[in-house]
View: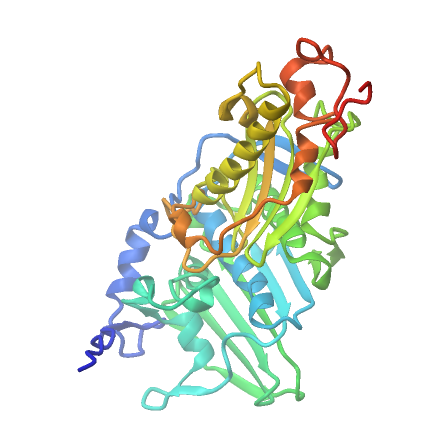
Length: 427
């Protein structure tokens, strides 16, 4: 007899997004009391160095920020960008920050994950209200469903509603030809009457506008460092989404059309001692879940820039470790074949690498609510990766061989090895 697993427990306690909705607000209150466990610290973090876009390139800059505030913005941004995976026809992502009004607005088009339909007849609740304005006890436990974005479970974008004084959702459903608008306020404690009107067939877009509850972050205005981080993350999205999506910041389109093009903002930066040096760079889309760009680090210390489902993993994690190990082992073996007497090890090679990585994986896990380090076991990242021969370019020519031995080369050096053949031009 086939034994079916018991159905997932759905808690009877639904923490409503409003005060008078008949729901148990315990979960809402618990999150607001203990934000560290959901969005990271609301307190100011000591100054940290980030790569920030200066309008032309990425440059290192010291930034002081509140991780919790950055997280709620990131949840909305990543949720919007992830609609591209739900609907490939999405071609616009636009972000506007109004410092005077202390508000953030994120627009994206394409069919959203939330239809304009009634989902709770007894309470008269429509899907947009349920999705954006109701907390459920098992939101954070929804691990049985594959999720590469916030549409698959977790509090996600609701956290921005919860930590805002005002949160407005406007969305159109081109299939049902309905437009929905609703305003939440007082940290999801109150809601307006929904406003449903007609829209055109095939008209699909969503706008999320929110005013962060700055008092909860010990702030009185949107500080410059926070706005700078928001801008930087929009630049990230332009590189991640590529040329099929027009990404805008305050009405201005960003001219970044691929992840490969995005990486140039770092490695061609004038602050880099590699600028104009002609160091090799290799870009490959290894499969449907991983694209990587490889170059050389500036100062003999391993560097990485990585993303998981749109989130920036500042400290790397298992995805970076896995891909970097493949690359360093490959390059180490290649060099040792040509210079047997040197006996290079993995660390010799790794410290000269700069790895840029963009991955999409199911149900990612992180070490904290700020999502800075991926902890998903390598076996769950996706299909096995195979490195193409193009990565050999990093080893020879003007690549690793110059870094490992300097410009004089190793004993018996007969000139730089060709990047493709590995043969000296003097042989």
